[in-house]
Image (cartoon, rainbow, N blue to C red; front, side):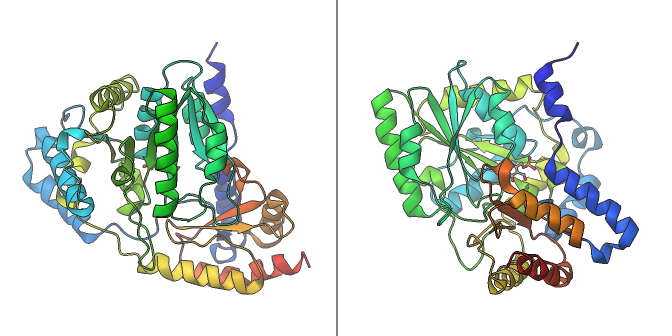
Length: 396
Ligand code: PLP
């Protein structure tokens, strides 16, 4: 006998993975140049040079036993200090190394935070559609309830009145992901200030803090000078979840962190509960080598020229053809309205007729749209344009 909930999760098909596997099969049959795969959010720009240089330096210079050894559960003090210094310099907060907890990427960071905030079977965590599909199992399989705020399909900001309607005495937190996967939208300071004011009012009404869980793996991926507000500067009860998967193109290296600002309500208890949650998941002391790399590369930023070119090419071309898209200021996704509102049918037809692989957004809590990951080669985008054109024409 096995745990039925985990069995179901382990056997549930992932639309994204299925599309990706289909693309590989088709590439072997018809040639990779005739498959247009926009399914996965796997970075396509190399990690900054300093990352590989640091790896070489660390491997050459660090004592081999220490290099391959455990760190402290929360990570090396020196690595945490480097990140704290960078955050403090950029956002003007007095960030301390002791407020950071290194994790194996954003996923375990998020799960640790969610576990820490779920106090009983009534605990609710909100997510704003469209959202990263894993939020659902992360909350539900940890004994909480995911409460979905419907999408604002005009601007893909946050419908504050819809948030307000859903806040109850059991609301423990709201997950905010900006720049957003899958919309590519960056929440404005105005939106976030509005949310902060609402949460402050509701926290006072219910007599306990409602935390913002800021899921920020795309923080550094923004274009055209758009600013991503640092949410702890706007709302004290923010817990930040960060990853280097996308910003330094290191998804396979599994490195990120949680930041619990010391000025948040019950900060010490929240931090300790996150540490405890990480402990029972066996997710403590992330790879020593990667922590050391981050120590050297905390101030590194990605070179976004290639993503920006892809974004402009895809967005402008699709708009010209008549597609409706959310304004993509960040991350590496374009969120497109299916021409007749049926994104599943669009995705299936695009796949079968053109080997054009797009992800229908039902799993992201926003049916009727599909997601394109444009972290791909620019020439693939060029080659795929006739397929997009043929698809929209076929709906006329
Ligand atoms: N949160 C969002 C919004 C994501 O898009 C992803 C990955 O795609 C994650 C979290 C998980 O990232 P990581 O690779 O750091 O676990």
